[in-house]
Length: 205
Image (cartoon, rainbow, N blue to C red; front, side, top):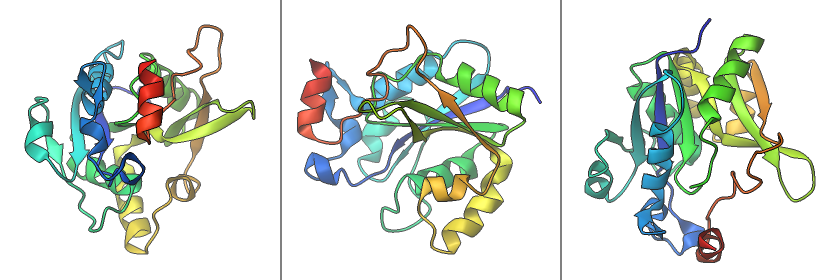
């Protein structure tokens, strides 16, 4: 099945604990909020697959709404983590596929959607997840960078209602393909994120 009609989702619903409790997605990076960097890179994804985008946030909603796309808080209480954002995105997704990206990774690849979609098509999978080199230890899955079928909503509702919160434990229940981003020309910093003020300053350098 051809992967067309995709909605992009920026995950910005966390507590920002390691960032000092501030709203991480609104922290400045080169003059622009981190989450806006993530949204703009979504909108720059090449090809005709992306139909629209939205943001998952739990505070400062007016600031996120100023980005010009729909903004949805978690439907689960208590800052339940990225999987709560997945659930919210699937609940509000009007397309056949959802692409998730975190708000704190401003350099992720501009061909992310295309490569995940190709892998999903080639393998007949339900979920495509990025994997990238990390710390010299080979490829490591990047579970917040996922392309998934919207009909997985029912499965995710069951998993979260049972108390599940780990992305990889849920994706392991489905046909998931890992997509390596370690090819010549791939930016080795593409999946570096800013969890702390120090990491944010390092990204700016």
